[in-house]
Length: 186
Image 1 (tube, one colour):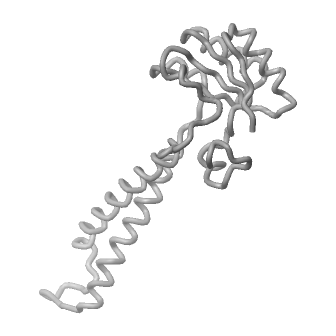
Image 2 (image 1 turned 45 degrees about the vertical axis):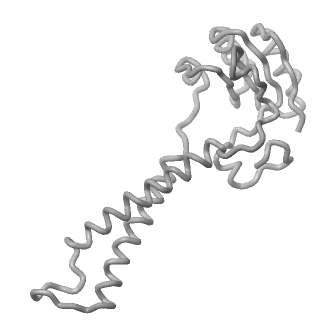
Image 3 (image 1 turned 60 degrees about the vertical axis):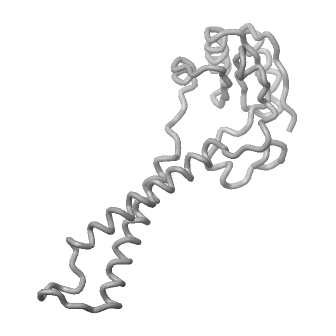
């Protein structure tokens, strides 16, 4: 979904069920950012988005995010790869029916090699695809909630809420000591 479109698509709703932030507060330090997250949670807002110029385990823990969806991409890719590899070997055996040493045409032990290789191949490719989709790469346009200073020296906390709750969210972010609070259109 592009940052300016109105309704999120199916893939956007699956990968990012939290939605887009409607109100964003700007903070000068990690401590202020953590305080803003706690303040927003205390005000009843559970869907938050954080922007940080540095990796911070404290922010991740305060956000209480559920595990990502990449592992499901890997699982599905591995299952499809394994089934496809075994099917490929089986069909090849039936098409070129060569009885070698009295062994059965469909023999599981030698087929496990191609099954394993196809499982690893497709699991790896689907993991990469899942990573690219869930991290929204490539992203030709940045989110309207993102400001360039979030990548330099400031932290941002965005609250995903209904338009009716935007005033309450602004108040919670200001009480946490925001340098600036702004609403995101759309």
